Length: 125
Image: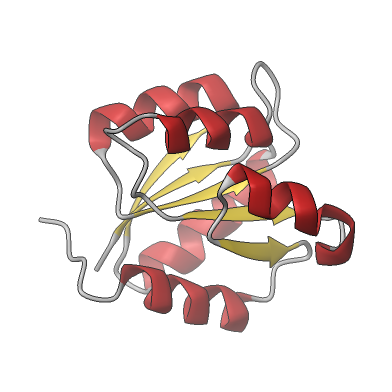
């Protein structure tokens, strides 16, 4: 079981992520905007962050940059989540320091493969 922070402003997607991640026994934290996501990440130090890129207050790109620049959170893997194609965001995705990509609509089989890969050996109490 990993502690996963989902930063997503759409309530339907939040609930969908909660359902599927908790079904796999993960502990799930949720933030509805980038600023709250950064704050929650620093407070809770999750094993993984799933970050929507289009967020209010502070977008996912800016939030990820802040997390990767902070020594406290720099090593936390971030999966970018967006409806944009990977090709369209690849360069910025790599420059920002994202560790993976989840497209919308979400392919949960692919999502769980990435979660397992990025959280291998990390089990939160």
